[in-house]
Image (cartoon, rainbow, N blue to C red; front, top):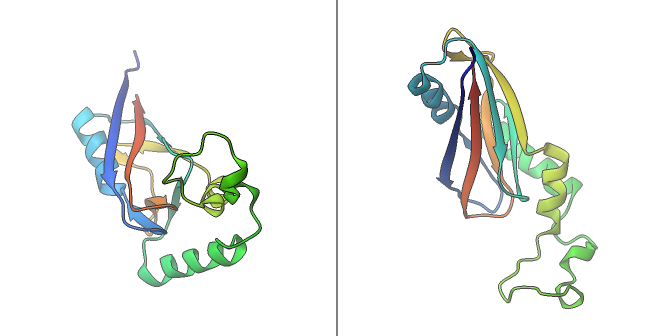
Length: 146
């Protein structure tokens, strides 16, 4: 019979745009759960973060940031940033439409196979939480099934 375990991974991010490698934390959850073969599902709990699998290499991460900020510039004509036209806006509400739009492009959840107690990642692959509006306290909901 399969078991389902739920965890909440908490982390403080840097930012405003920063990739955080959470592979080791996820692998540690798999090990603590004693999961041999199964599935890990992770879901970011925020609208201005993303979860991706890619290489954690400093210059590539800089390229990723530059690519997305050129594709979706912070100073674009985004309606979400017209704070004076939005009802019930908190006094400290940021102008962060670009963060929401980039999050839509990247996605906020992923699933990974677990094989023989290890995340099913390739040699250069890492699980990255992409902070798009930080620094902040963030949470990733993780479920392990197997």
